[in-house]
Length: 118
Image (cartoon, rainbow, N blue to C red):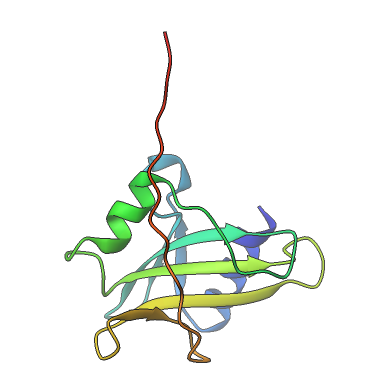
């Protein structure tokens, strides 16, 4: 919740309308709306300084869909409950990588998992 609040406040200060879609299971948490802009923002918060998060299969799928790739943002809030630092990653067509405003490149390691049940 602290990470979502940080990201919401960040975009509102920039003049955007922010709508939570967390309960809708659409593959992102917030829709950030400007005059001619719509960002689909997945929010992740960490307790430590490291930028390392897991994405659900649904989040990862939407992050990479051609339809959403240019409007998708991955917002990572480190140390979310204390000093909190926000990093917002977007896909760079030029670099073919996910980068933030500082030029940090997000390394993505694909993993396979399974659900087992009776």
